[in-house]
Length: 303
Length: 303
Image 1 (tube, one colour):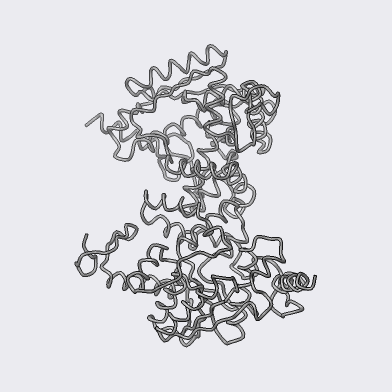
Image 2 (cartoon, one colour; image 1 turned 90 degrees about the vertical axis):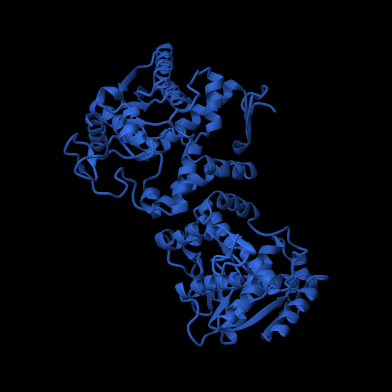
């Protein structure tokens, strides 16, 4: 197979785009997909500072690289979770990548705010992944808001988005369907949330990292049973195999023709929010979920 | 495994209902599912005559039997398509079943209305299955309307409905999503359309026929490449394997929470209809699709 752009030997085949690319042209393709996503949904205005949520995995490192290459003013934030044998090496690897590339990285240590994940896990009874996700979302948003970033960019790719959309469709959850999309506008102390990788697949992001020599963290979290929506992703992989292009068509058709039938996207998920009486960030109850988790951790430590 | 109702040895296992049943109790379960569907969606009012669209396959014969057993006033209509080596034996088998059970069967021969399917196939360029479906829908509705039936019942089962819903969701086709459901209300010369089997699966309908000794037609149509939505059905079978009950939950959630966001169900699929100038039945153009097909067949025969 030959590269669709330059005619050289193709290194990657993309049936959904009826194309194969050599490594250099694949990079052009990948950047254009992200550029299209950013432009089509007005994700970033000229001069705006963007914070990238950086886990250290392939998606977040690729996102940092491509947004920077596209000329955007980006910095990264890594949340150090305090998990033994995991958080330190992930953080060190992430810091090395940022240093090598001349990118700015901020690190927030959950231990410093009384929310080291092992202590949280010991104190709360709910599944730790949901709780950890809530904490990370809170601090990513809060850091962006307090440091003048116009938007928070996350590395969700097409497979993540399609699997989440399918989960919402299976339940016909109108609030979630209305709220799902590549952009959530800013709202009070919520900064704008953007997903510039929503048009590229997990495979494409992995190929981008491979060709660019991006040495990302590959091991999973020791507390997690595996990636989310694995079954739904497999299901859409089968569908894509039978009908290349189906995944992106399904998601774009949802944005064009499905979502308008549901409530307008908002960060509250249809709930009425007021400032948390402890931290001041938007909450559906008097004390926000993160402040309540911290209180549980403190109570456990005191017991 | 024991029967959930009577404790005898179970002959069929239904993970989605956390149950197994012996043949007798399975029949009770099956009838109750249909009874629930009919009652919940007010499909049939007391004293109404219902016409069952009878292909001769398992779904239509099971539907005839169960509606009759539930005390409804039902008759069948079989459309004889005029396909060599197929339509005659299908029709004979269907007639034998109706006679053995004391049911009333009407037979409409497409040859008699100038629409024998082989002639149609030779005259039109579109895929024959879509054209044949259009012709059958026209005559089922027309016969019901002209003979005082309040509703036309078809044998669509849960698998058919879920696969069709998924196809509509993949395209986010708002008119089709609004129009999909177990009941379409009557509208002008369109009689009410009902799907009393929408809560039972293909497997359950096959098991019902097996236990009741219903000898249905098993071979496919010689003109068809196979059943519709085979891929989508496989996909939902895998999903059901992982999460028993997911199929019916998805469909019922759509009816409760999804469909209300789309246009109200109507038989025109969002189009404006007026009487066909040839046959008088509702059409989106001056001459309806079926009358235009007949004109093509006549032109071909004259050429």
